[in-house]
Image (cartoon, rainbow, N blue to C red; front, side):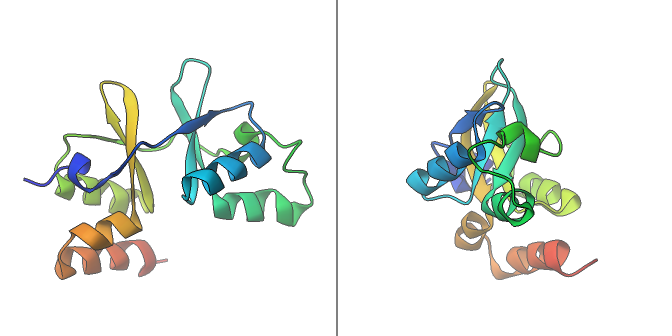
Amino acid sequence: MTTARDIMKPGAQWITRGDSVATAATAMADLGVGSIVVADDDERMCGIITDRDIVVKCVALGLSPDMTTAAELCESTPRWVSADADVEDVLDQMESHRVKRMPVIDNKRLVGMISEADLARHLDDNQLGEFVTAIYGRP
């Protein structure tokens, strides 16, 4: 059985709700990723910020990335999967919620992130096709 741990990119990091969008952008650039988890003071996930969020919800609206907080860009508590979840469960979660990135949790700690690129490297053509159709193929 292939698990989330098998396909995730390990070492995912997070920023706090009070960190600026500029801090989020710098962290993503340093890590070479397109998203970062946002956590509250108790280290619980409260959102994910993507590079697209920064452009569309901050820069395009004329907001200052230095003055806008990560919390202001978060819309809802993100979905997540257990590190031991079967890859089919991961796909079901990502497809049903139409998300392109999925945090992976082990013992209540963020241990990795699964992205579209991770799926492309680890899924067969049928699984990947189903995912792409679910995410991009319906309104």
